[in-house]
Image 1 (cartoon, rainbow, N blue to C red):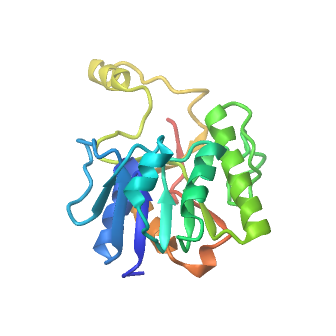
Image 2 (spheres, rainbow, N blue to C red):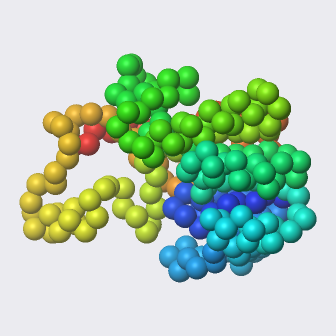
Length: 229
């Protein structure tokens, strides 16, 4: 929706940079809150940059001032304490809080495919995922008990021109250049999905300010299933 005031906490990462640009493209009034140090994906000139270290609540409070936002989209919350600090700062000053969770929070390994939004959340193998689940639990409780206008979004493996869609860093490129086999887990037949950040952004920005998104959760991925082979 054009004309919405949107604050992106982060706003210059792989996923959030495309969301920032998409929101600007459709006429939203965009604010970006981060340290202002990104050289890889600097904040667009059209947005309003608020500079603060999000790990410093007082610095965040000073940067935000008395502003109110239709939407606060939080790409930099990883623990319940992170989420609670945002709620303490923005409660009563935002129309919607959008929390970026992770598709890694889903039941691992999955009991059945495809994985959908109603798939249980349980990942005993990764603390990052368990922390994201705990964040979701906090928000769901706040929505049920207090009517917090929260929306949860779960991205999966997302990439852009600065990050090729594989893990392993330079070693993968080195093996390709040498003609060596690329190492994958298992037998290479497990299923995965890859999503370009601009595709993610189109779906994500459509949730901003949408009344039907309040109290709900969504995952945003490509609709193509791929094996690791």
